[in-house]
Length: 490
Ligand code: AMP
Ligand code: MG
Image 1 (cartoon, rainbow, N blue to C red):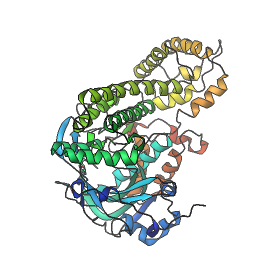
Image 2: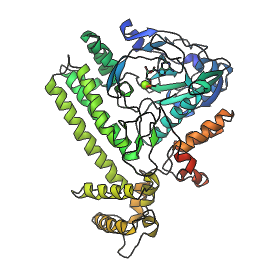
Image 3: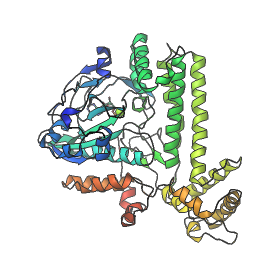
Image 4: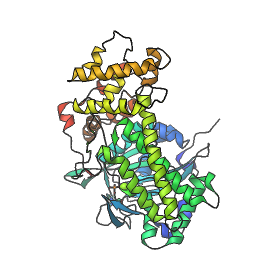
């Protein structure tokens, strides 16, 4: 039996802080005043073998509000740089987040404890080092929602709020988020040392990441294989975003995880009506990070990483990695979309069947999540008219024509409609974190009612199971909810 641990018993093994000083700056958190625990996530605590009762201790908000350090913690701000909106931004680094240390659980999994909003660091530039409660709630909930959807992501243990205002467009409540990931090394971490012309540090960081997260690659040709695997993991991650209808919003290379998980939740958004040109970030005037651009931006970011690794990877090997990215992204996306359509076999016409459906959905502004969930109920009998589904479309004839092709395609596969429905319901979520749901939780939290955060966290941890009492949370957004502008401000 695994024993649950107290905060003081968390076993730290701070591998990153043992790298040479060139990789980080040692810095301590700047505490929030009068810290209050806003939300605690027992699912994330379980990943650390942390006793959930620890959240009841008065010290808990002190620890994750930056006032107390847990024994074994060695806080550092990590150095990185990156391309922001296509332009190399020079040195960035953790300007408001501090890596407290790394904890290993009884299963041998390592977790970074990363405190976001922990105050200024040597990399804060002009920033205040703080995060606001609004953005902490958005990051906390979306990480758990993505995990529930089966998408690799950072997780979050808790949110702690303080009572000093943090100035953004207006004064807001300041907060800290305890974020967890196997590592916070990013593409931009390598770029920082490439830009400084320090190939020995690029190599040292690559060896560090390979030894811990790609140990099967430990051989002479490890660097090109590493680039290749990062490319494939990134391709699969972005294919998952596309399939679930999610846009990151700020796919700068400093927000791209070296282990292929979703990192840094800012102005992200789930699609409501299917719209490939969807831009979730109000500050993204050119639409660089629009929904449909994400696969290409992944490619761009891998080129940035490839350049940073150019002392270890030949141009030819880089090209091979990039080609693997493109192939893996297309293949994984089609595989996921085929599953969303309930198809088990692969047929050459599937791509056209899918694309024609998506084009119809875009033209008719059909809600992406609600429609795919409903499509599970498609009846493949000859005389079925699938009235409820055709009602999603203004162009009913267009849907009918597509439905005949879909029906014929389904009849080529084995198994009854009910089996397909069950299969599709395990893949097409009922509940997603639409902006208006997060917004409701944020507005209640401003009134010091934190219950909606917990309600959403629990709902979204299990997005595929019907929870009839929560039906209202599966509704399309109300008019006010479509107009929420989400910017980079956080
Ligand atoms: P982000 O847009 O959150 O990915 O942040 C990009 C860069 O800006 C990172 O280096 C952050 O650490 C830094 N940054 C963002 N907000 C702040 C802030 N309020 N204070 C200091 N640094 C910040
Ligand atoms: Mg970032």
